[in-house]
Structures are given as C-alpha cells and as structure tokens.
Image (tube, rainbow, N blue to C red; front, side):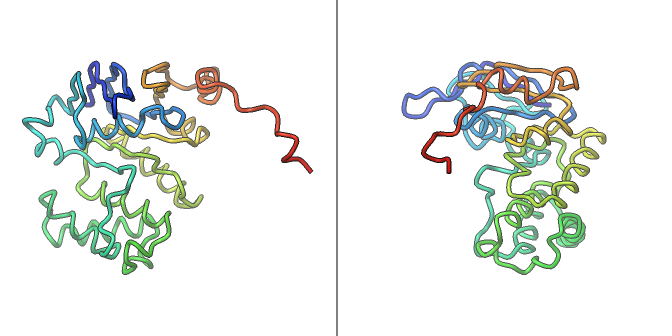
Length: 242
C-alpha cells in the first residue's frame, strides 16, 4: 500500500532523508529513530503534505501529484502538529472533517459518538481544542484520522502523552484494524509498545534506513535500536548526584 522509492528531502541544504526505499504492506509497521532522524519528514512526504526533492511516493499505487484527492479518501493521518481547529470543540472538529471525506452529517455524528466513547472523550466533547490537555488533543486528532475508516494510517507518535487506559484501548484498536487489512505506519519512542504491537520495525538513522526487521523474543526492538543509535549515557554526571 505504501511505496517510497529513493526519496530525498533537504531543508536549507541540510539533507534529512537520503534515498529512502520503503514498501509497507497491510499490518502494523513502526518507524523508529532518534530525534532528527527523519521520521516525521518521511510521514509528511507519505501524507502528501510535502513533496520529495527526488524519488517518488505512491499510496495504493497512486501518486499525489495527479491523484491526491483519491489517495486522501483512503488515508488517515495523525500529524506531528495534530492539525486541530483550535477554536472548535472536540466534537465540532470531528463534525467539520466528516464531510471532507464524503460522510453525511448523520454518518459523521454516529461515527464521532462511537469514537468519542472508545477514546474516553465523551465528557470533554464540548471542550474547545485549545483548552484541551495534550492527551485529549492527541486522541481528538486520532479520532479525526479514523472517522472515514481509511485503508492506510500514518500516525506520528500516537501513544505520546496518552494515559495507560487509553493506550491499552488504542493498542487493541490498532491491532484490530491491522487484522482487518489496514496498513498502519506509526512512529514511536516507546520501544516496549512497539515490541508489543508491531509486526515490522524500520529504523532510520541520519536520514537512511539502517534496519528493517520483524521483532521477536530473539531479536528485540530495544537491542536492535540501541545497536544502531548507540547505548544511552551509562554514567550520571557527578554534579547531578547527591
């Protein structure tokens, strides 16, 4: 469903992505890497928010330049900046995006109610987005991405700032969607969660794909990750000790 070929991207002459080749089939694939490795940039290319400097990006065999509208009908995106309408309430945000995906008002309202209940947002549904907690904002943006039942999901840090109960719900939800045939590409810094839910892990390092593997007990995510990005600092500086 996702096909990225030799994609490059630079900002102010600084290379961020350097020849990315990536094919993602249905299931959950997690994109890992240190801050600045290029994860969010790659998701922006795959969601059509930016174009690669060179190379190509296809979603379901379609390209954004000529078939962007058709791609977006089957694409759900949780972006780095969340993309909420700040002056609208949680429910108003959801009601605003439903028609953009061809849903009727009644379909949008019905699906929004289900997602609000699933993600524990019902009580806060009339809270203006700019007044929501970070976790509420994240879950609202996820609900908006799911509203039209997309075949492809691009999720930037979906578990960041989410409480344990909601994380458990999201874990089951994404697992069910993957079982039903959805293609899910997500970034995360929570390696234990990635170990649990991802059937495949791709690690970016300095703008390149450094590892692409299926995690198992024998080849755990944490071990592979730190072998590439380096082990954490083993010693706490003396001045921080008591």
